[in-house]
Image 1: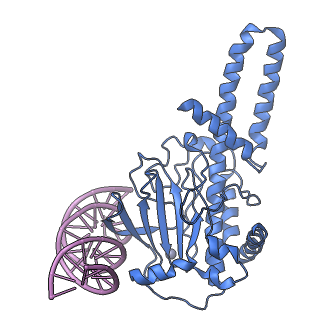
Image 2: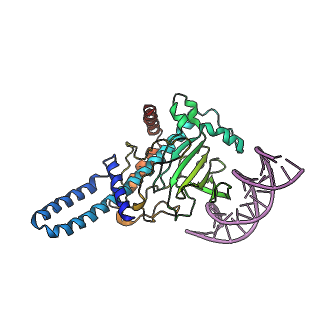
Image 3: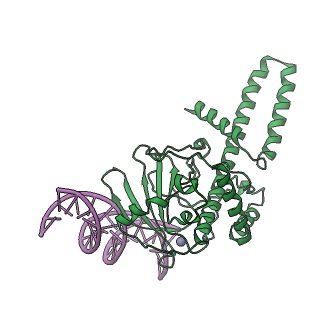
Length: 317
DNA sequence: CGCTTTTGACCAGCGC
DNA sequence: GCGCTGGTCAAAAGCG
Ligand SMILES: [Zn+2]
């Protein structure tokens, strides 16, 4: 198991499209390789042991990097949800069908929107097939129902999806088509914020949480520190590491990033997103968070992000 | 002490 | 009308 995990990890690392995080650890790696080469020249037998040792260290670095990646993914998805909210509010004409009935829910299925949220673990992100195919029809974007597939550990029994908002659970039901219970959440800002969400495990993959969001937040995210412990470094929004390919409408298969090895039960069942270990404070994490917060609340930045991502979406189609 | 979670009761569509 | 099912309410319990 571990071996395969390691392999996956390094594979992920190869995919990492951004460089900001790489630089510091990369130096270490390079120096490791360098000393490794030196050793190789001098004694061959012992170099094998050292090789293994260096391999371990490099693997460790890989894990760190993957952790960073997951952090960045989380940040990205937070930003993305902000973006969705913004885009939906922009053409805001039809505020609410205020559909709480099943029939209207099914009728709303047209403009349902799939988004991915990184739960610190693997995540998948996909946008709705139809509404994205025709971004010209801006009116499709104002979908009030979005769906997120979140990958968690099977051992994690909690139905908690960290998306940056505070939720209050108000119900739980076992549905007929799924042995796993479904949890109902309301935004903690209710009733001023009418957003609700349902979270249920996928029938096929018990490690997959399906979160269905209804409505849009009419408030910024609560001052929640969103980086996971340890590796919160800089926030690099320029790349889109977590965007996954679209799902076929019938089979919601999702592409996931394998970062399960990096999150050794650190965040598995706690809503608390941070348990900052003081050791890792070499980097002014608070500064980074401040920057991220100011960015996410800056309408100019959001507008720019909207433009960039919508352009990307158009280009993809 | 205030907030959240739990959990059974209750209510409203829907199919028959 | 009746039963099934999904969604919500609200009192009690739990937690920091
Ligand atoms: Zn809200």
